Amino acid sequence: MFFLLNSSLRESNEFARTPFALARDPFWENYQRVWSEGEFGSYFINSLIITGGSLTLILVLALGAGFVLGRYSFKGNNVIFAFILTGMLVPAKLAILPLFIQLKWMNLLDSRLGLILVYTSAALPAAIFIMSGFFKSLPTDLDNAARIDGASEFKLLSKVLVPLVRPGMAIVAIYSAIPIWNDFFLPLVFLQSPEKKTLMQGLTVFFGQYASQWGVLFAGLCLAALPLVVLYLILSEQFIKGLTAGAVKG
Amino acid sequence: MSSALRREQNRTTGTLLIPALAVIIIFTTVPALTTLSYAFFSWDGFQRSTFAGFENFQRLFSYPYLDQLTAALRHNTIAFIVIMAFQTSFGLLLAYAMFRVKRGLRVYRVVVFLPVIFSLVVVAYLWQSLLDPYYGPINQIITGLGVPELAKPWLGDTSTALPTLMFINIWRWVGFPAIVFLAGLNAINAEYIEAARIDGASESQIFRKIMFPLLAPSLTIITVLTFIGAYEWFDLPFVIGGSNGSPAGATDTLALMFYRLSFGSIDSGANNVGVGSALGVLIFTLVGFGAAFGSALLRRREVEQ
Image (cartoon, rainbow over all chains, first blue to last red; front, side, top):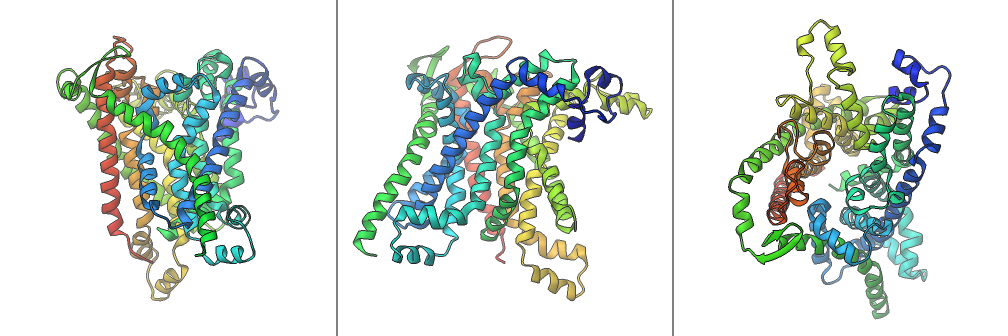
């Protein structure tokens, strides 16, 4: 990893001569070229929109559904929960043909929104499963106290409980963001216009374009990994906390 | 519960649950059921023709598909066993090392998890360059060590391609069990470990007799997820070996075969949606029942803290 970062800051010809030397003079131009030449920048932004959009939708929907399933007892709760669990086992790839036809019919083919909805649907079962577990583990006294204070159910969820399930949200965010940001398969099948292409699709072209310009190539690879690394760095504390809490429950 | 609260809860249930369920039903359940229905029709390219009953399943289990199916299933099974054995034990070792380490835990936590975060496209490209038979540093190092006969086209040789892919997979994913086990270790009540230490237990005894049994819930999660991942193994073989599982089908998997049948193979271009959907149903059944059965079985072994 260090090699990757180091190499991204070196001039290509110099790299070819001594691939393992340190970058004493950071050669930032590599990053400039990656961003301005070709389509790298726009692919990057497309990926950000799609991953960000999916993540927001996943978190909002999973918070709501996890709250209801984890904290209310009502008829059909278990049935709905079991149904959602089966969704965890269905890989999106196996349903790719009908999904293609269905998206075309819904006018969502070659659209970012269509892709966001497909990703959301694929990630939601696991997200709801995780969130409902976290909601279940909170003491019920909290709800009653908030209700006595006159809070509505929405207030209870958004003001009292959401801050307490943040570790769960960190797990959901990381688990959902990694496969979505890195996916190349669904964009390959569902997106056709060149201006909508995502970064992972774009990278394959990029490899060919800069085949021997190592510095630029490595700069591109580093940039491609950057958003997830940042996300993980921000959330890792909550993430580990969440996993630990999950392990206690078993 | 007051009836006013009951009413409000019913309303909340509706508003919060229905959107999530709608998304799952429209974009997962309906397409999955449609795949199921596709398996019972005969197909002309992407055009559905007549009802075929179980004919697609019969064809999947006869020449020429049967040979591909058994080879792919064998590769998936080998991948599950090898990945499970090595990835899990390395992950556990890493977790234990991180658990014992006094300083720099934050840094290790990030380093161990980095390959998991990295995009597969990047990982595959990196390893392909490293393993390049002529210019790759790995073979250069092997030759430099004076054993040039061990320098191989690792990804191009039928006997080494699958083990190499499994190795890359393990390198990439080992951080996942490591982090899950680390969380499991952190959740163990420190008093147990303290008590054992006072009773004079050695560190290895503490690990074997106290920590390992209490990690059973983490092990259940990892086993089930590894099982699902191994039998749906697609991305890495696809990016490196292509949809044919090159070289010579040595890295073919069930999911690659499904892809070829659905979208057409590179050499013939012909596809067979019916047989492909039958295979999809087979994979789903295998993974679904395997995961459900396996997790029920493993959960019985777990001990309460």
